[in-house]
Image (cartoon, rainbow, N blue to C red; front, top):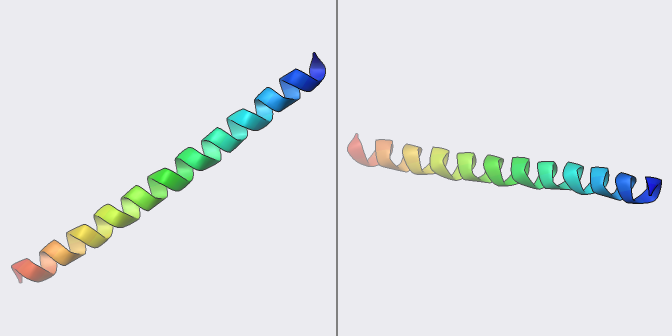
Length: 42
């Protein structure tokens, strides 16, 4: 039972890391898009 709990904790940590990575990628993409739009507007 203890082993299963440890696995669950590890899964949660991995999910959190994946979510952070996806969020960072999305933010970077929207940031680049905003720069491109602002260059076109100038």
